[in-house]
Image (cartoon, rainbow, N blue to C red; front, side, top):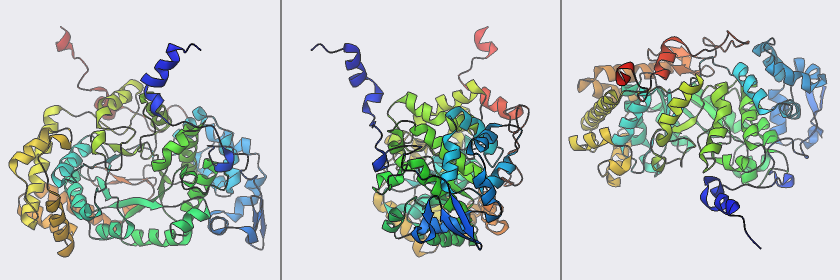
Length: 556
């Protein structure tokens, strides 16, 4: 039989041909939203105790049901909310005349199935409209990944400085080898405060080391504390909602910002979805997060995003989980990190709902480096895409959190960051860097163009940091002794945040003067045209004046 050359082209030449796509299999949890096995909403309260929820009697509750029933549901309003028409609540979300806080009050009375019903009424455009109103912080922002194949502290510091210079307010690193975490954390702390004072940093490693680095002042936040939507997955991780709540309190008591991580599709990937839709299980995760008292959550598929992206309506489900996080008055870090598709068009389609609505952090890891250097694995958007991202902001007059930077200023700052970390390493007795290595880093795109870095040097650096119990204050002293008073003051101001606790508020970032911008003092007040966050003034000038735009003198 003759074959279509058009179909052959689609199947062999297009990026989409490399993606994995699947038919829905609800019994396996391979369904994004509105699964046939999702429970119907119900709630019964007797003598102040939830005795039935979403079709289950209390004696049938698993530990997640118990935690949600006892800590997440506001009984003072729950019975009223459960009697309400879910479609009416859905319409409130897109109604500019219904204030954000009024909706949040009702959300606190919902069971997971009720919330599921509300979200399933919305199409993706309505979710974008709702997200524009419901996000906690008025000003959107963005987080970056800062990693490299060599775990080279010099390149980490230089890239961290450049990312801060471009406007990223949070920077996250990880490691190819767990042993390297202390030197990686030190590098991005220094680089971040060269590039943009007030930038928050983290090193994503196992939880005890992550907490240790934070307590020493080498990092300022964490987000890799995962929770899950079914009991079996929790048990496999030796965790419970109560243990997660305890860990969250430990971070907060040390002045460290913390958010949980969950993501649509995680339970399906791990084989214990209980036949429920991905969104329904993620709703349980979000309600647990609020019940623990944690200020926010990183979700939107994250490392399981390809599972959600493989089924019909998967990108809609990702926006739905982000929206429900906002509806719970939590900080949302809305994914877009893990590469969901080989198709540039699909990657853009996955981004657009969060990009247009604006979220607290549109990316939970825009890879500032080239994709091959992202040790988390290639992000949906990488260093190769930065000019396109900046131009999209200009095209749509949207603040995606990134600003263009003059090339000469870019190189100069990278040289400064290289000089600063070289001096700090010399002062602390860590393996040194050469001037030649700094110059290579200053102009390099990624680790393929930088000087060689021996793994043994990374091990030595990490051992010295841990064995000598080097802290953020030691870094401040080293910076000041070597004449970098401006960076020393910036690192010291980051440490002072542990005392004030201002960046523990919901959706907190710090501006370049170390003033917190949070859901408390920068609350989202959108209620229709002329209100809320607007890209104007200095911000619009920054966004629109990209380096590629021709000036009058270029034309005449």
